[in-house]
Image 1 (cartoon, one colour):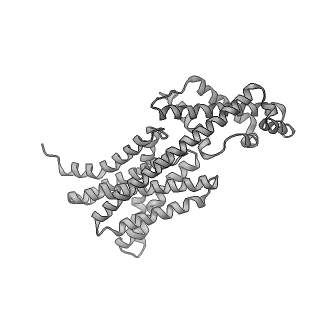
Image 2 (cartoon, rainbow, N blue to C red):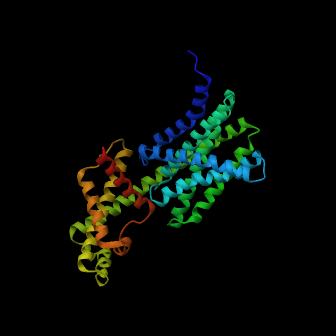
Image 3 (cartoon, one colour):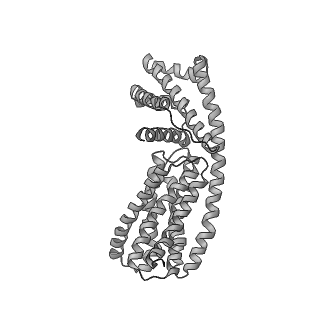
Length: 346
């Protein structure tokens, strides 16, 4: 039984980008991004594509330029900006901690965008031949995922170097994404060349990103696990008051009531215990084991949230010097808490 051309064209237009995203998830040995989150990010890309469809239609009618010029210079900026907003929201909410999950999240946004764009294109050019859909599937669709993945990776790298999020850190990645998108659209007259360029350039770049990030995760886990273990041992052994951290906490008695200082110590202990639990889960995943979140861990999150309210924002800021404060360290607790909530809902 012959496959209808419309089904074949849709499959060729969509399957390559979905397969590429699945490959990225498979390569992530630490499973930093859960499938549920990836699906939500793809859905965000779908929504972004719909918005851009109407924005591009409006701007194309409002500006006095032809379609080819618009698609080369204006369209890439509009579309990359819209896709970038999803990544900015994820980074600033500490949902992305490593280059691997930045690449996966970026490609997932582009995947959602490409799905809708290709489905819309199929309605507008239903008579297009097989060659067109090969270009759309292996070229345009993967380009959308690749440019957003590059934006996410470069932005997170600059944020890590600056040791804090800032809008300026997102500019170079956005400029590069727009440049690559525009360069691809300049090759519309040579679609095979454009598709070949995407296939030859993007996989090696993302492979290097994954290799570098895997090493960074391993280093962070090793150093962080040791530091958290020493902190917890110091607190539970009774020697913490004599340590630099304990002396710093004692100095806060001039600014906070004794009960608040005691809550800060409890908060520090819980934070460290949960950080160790998160790192332990990642280590188990890297070795092929799946660790479930137990009831005791969920209870610790409930207690920690209570302590956060008890000490207030000023108290939390005062204890920051005793905690690991990088985006990775904040991310690990977000990851652990999110998985704990998922287990409760199931």
